[in-house]
Length: 485
Image 1 (tube, rainbow, N blue to C red):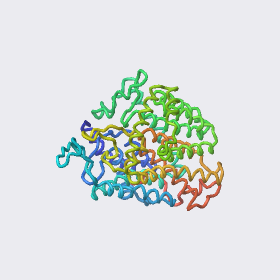
Image 2: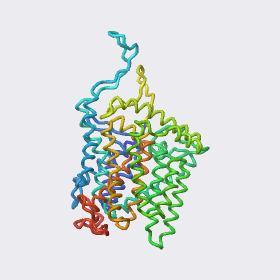
Image 3: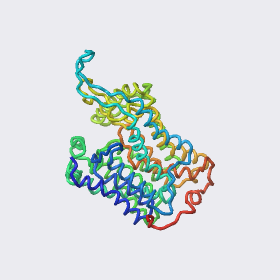
Image 4: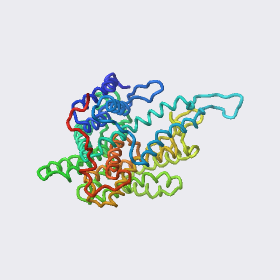
């Protein structure tokens, strides 16, 4: 049960965001309002208000920055609508997918004993059907989730914005390394000490005779992936660092690599160890093509699973050769996915909607029998093919656009800051096949890359070879730190 401080932090976070916008330049204030909320606000704690989605560590920062930029910032007109036509279509589809989902799930799901004994029915429990009045709440939730994406598309698309985002990911990881190392040494207790409760299963934080940190995130896997993104960001910045700062930059990379090892997450460790050398030394075209490959795998994976084209047994056998315990966990995930895919197949187009209606439950007691781990199966079961294609397509679109631009204009046309962000987005999409690791930081990264691609290719017209300095910077943009009121 969250304590009073947990709810107080949620209440004061809009004021923290306002202070950031008053004291920092806009790009930095936008990033740290969302990144700070993700890292330091309490998990699970939320305010449940009627007819609106829950206000928690994700929705409160998103709503705060949107209102500040709409009503509190001078000289910056907010333009949420993407320029790319496909991005417009996918954005509208993702938001409006809530309407057919709600309208096709008006029937309650009833749990009863002594089935088929009409007229005598013993109802134990039920999940209510969704009604027209639920449409507004789901629409608001969809819009709020896209706020980081849409704002980053406008305000983080410049080379300066991309550098600011990479720097924030690196600095945020360095800051988070302090409580993470404390938890690795003493056990995961930060959330208990600060907010009065533990947010997950403590047993899952025990690994290889020690602990893996969780701090204020939903799970240790989330923290390990964040450390991995910070490591890749640090490597990207080290590659372009000035000669006199190279040594310090590489020391940061080495420190974060050690921290990633201590997080004891096999998938994130594999991402980090494989991609960090690429970011440091490989040509940009290799990095962007690999990121696009990751995105393609993430987008087509459910289709391949539906047609039984994924060699699950071979994957499990390969994992068992590396780590039998992890292979057992992977097999458990695959078994859950099989059950949830069968459930989703009953309503494939628009899904089952919210309130856990897409889960496998005991027909008599209503007890949940399956646990959805991957983001893909969650969105697929909740919003069907429409929601899945729009969400994953919107995340993959910036990578496709940048790869296309590079193919037309050549590697020299792209800033080296683009490649590490592309890889961060790509590995996050792959990780979303295993875990529900879609976070506001993912949307920030995707939005910044989409905006950058739109500036390089305005309305499909290829920009000049060295367009980064001319087209990526807004000529009417004022400089200075104070941006509010």
